[in-house]
Length: 414
Image 1 (cartoon, rainbow, N blue to C red):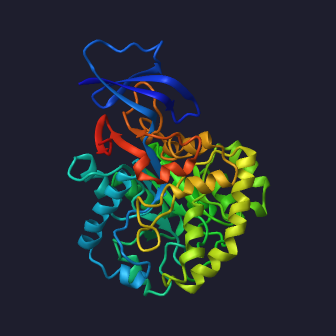
Image 2 (cartoon, rainbow, N blue to C red):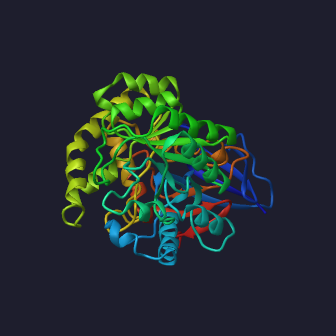
Image 3 (cartoon, rainbow, N blue to C red):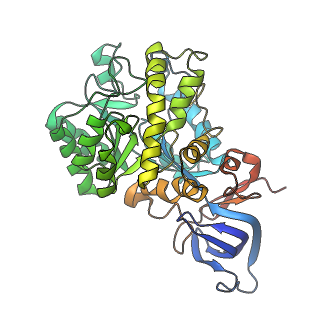
């Protein structure tokens, strides 16, 4: 079926704007894009109009976990079935909020969710999945207060523990064998882990190089959780494609030039740290996590300002884990407001949530993120222009329709 979409304003996800735009769509693909003088609408095809048209958004850093608590003890007591059933709601909530794609950077559910969404059984965004992240023992992906064997044999946990070059290489190969679209490594300590600290470097250079070598054989990207400068530097020199968080990048600003030189995309995830600072005590989060978030938040904001000013490519990711702290769909786009506050212009904010977000998943996501001929027809119909106010993308009512693969999957047009 062929149809045409016309828009007063088209935001293409690459940084360009087209007025009085026409997009021709055939089945699930975009056939032609341009101004009305350039693109002629064939006679007899259906025409749909929207005031503002933009690509469907992509959350470049999330975790579909199916949990109702951030108490890891209770989390790990849930059955896989319980988590999977909750996750079907999580992905639907994301779609309702304008997210037609998501990069899941650590979840045992992500590959299964991806498959059942792709087969059409449940509604949800197009998932690019890392499956379980890779962590060293005693690293950010370990649960330090649990018996080590219970963590090693917990297949439903967010991470897999690996130590030494051989184990790292084997874990990467097994992750790729399962169909992962990327590999995620914990290159430093973190906020939510008990005994480590964001400044601590994790994995050796040799371990990272082994993981990255295997990923490159398969043509997939490697994503590095990295807060402190030691871990950021090691990960970038090893050859990762994206750095997540970079909370303390301000402590060694020369790394910004290294990231630019190697074309590393930065995914800041400021919103999750802000929420821990603001609501952590109220929601009963562990004291160590609240303390680390409060210690790091001002550094985080300064770090991202420096990166924005220097022109580091920035992609928008929430690092949402689910309720009660971060329910999916209802706040993922708050990250866009924070990116605007640290200096990204509105057009660059939208690019961070579309074209650059898709770039974080590498070749596997080449068909999404922008409105271009040949790409998948993933669109948002908006009443109001987010270039005037990026917070409009937090408002579901402004998102009048969500189109994924040429099909209207959310319709609020009345």
